[in-house]
Length: 102
Image (tube, rainbow, N blue to C red; front, side, top):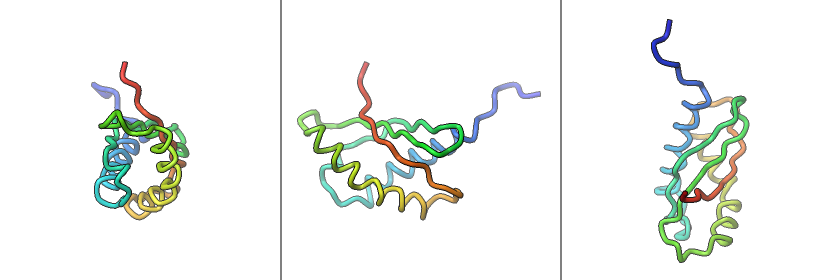
């Protein structure tokens, strides 16, 4: 029936969340420590309840512990902004992890 495998809903939602979180980092957050972050990918659980957001630090001299604290502190703001921008019944719980270069 399908020539290629159709996208799962979790993949579509993760792409949308990646785009919106990147826009939030660029235009909404006022913390200058978060301006040097690039969102690389978002992994969603199949039930859309958890989203793991992977990011790169553009400058290596940045203190990683400080960035993690700032991200955890701004987690609620990012989630509320996603709630305003996305038409989902429930906004997933957000987790941030640094992308490790292989």
